[in-house]
Structure formats: structure tokens, C-alpha cells
Length: 210
Image 1 (cartoon, helix red, strand yellow):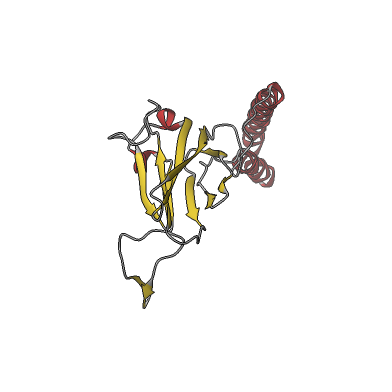
Image 2 (cartoon, rainbow, N blue to C red):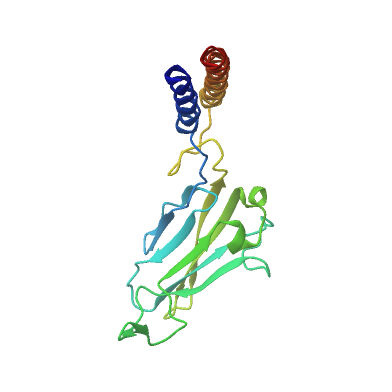
């Protein structure tokens, strides 16, 4: 009976090891990518991120009588202030607060766009792509407006690790994915074989004990 119990223990251990070796997949939880809006323009003006990340434009331009407005061409039609485009409204460098509450609820120093399915009401694949944006710099004294252009490129987070920001994909990465898949299948085969041996031994020792 001791031999039978030993075989059962081995089989259970192998099955539990399978759970440890093959981790469950987790989706990219998302991060915030800051785009600095200043009197010298926007930095960076070409941004790369993943689905579920947030683009945040922060105005740090404290020049008197200057406001910034971010317009994002959401549908890539070349028009930045269309009905379905995203607009920040005027951004100032700071907003007055009293006891932690903004005095003017319409005052904003930053503008966020969360590139996920819930926020944008878009499918995952539709979110992936390039979004052109403009920073409209308005001088209240002269009445002149200066336009700065930039892009936000959103990539799929499939087969990459959280925090991925590189815009280039290579054949080496694709080969690595295939190698990882092959390794997983090999492990599954080995565990299946070991389990079969263990079960066979269990039957044999069980008969002997009887």
C-alpha cells in the first residue's frame, strides 16, 4: 500500500507542477504616458503606447495670456475638430483650488485619453493605429494662434510584456514566440508521458497489493 500511495503522490505532484510551469496569461493593465506641453512645443511629439494605456497632455507653459488646446483626429479624416474628434478645451498651466476643490470646474491643466475599449467605446482592434493631434497655442493679447503637430501611435499588447514602448517588431521576436510555444508543447508532452507512466505503475502496484 505504501508503494501505491507513493505513486499517487508523484502523479499529483506532476499535475500541480504543470500549473506552475504554465502560467496564466495576463492582459496589459495600462500605464500613463505624459506629453509635456510648453512654450517650446510638445515633447515627445511622437508617442508610442499600448492598448489600455493613457495619453496625458500636461500644460507647463506659464507664459502670460497664453492657452493651449489639444485636438486629436480620432477618425483619421484629416480634420481635428470634427464631431467625433477629441478636444481638450483650453489648458492653462495651473488651476486655482480652495480646500482641494477647483474654483473654476472648467479650468484644466492636463488632458487625458484612455485608449481602452470601455473609455472609447471601440473594439480592441479598432483602437490600434495612429492618432494625429495638434496643440493650438492661442495668444490672448495678439489674437494669434500657433499650431504644433504630433502623433500618438497605439499598438496591440499581444505577445509583448507590460511597459512595451518600442515601435519596431522584428522577425526575431516572432521566432521567439514560436520557440516559446514549442517549449510549452514539449512540457505538456513530457508531463502527459510521466502521468501515463505513473498511472500504469499505480495499476500494477494496486494489483500486487490486492
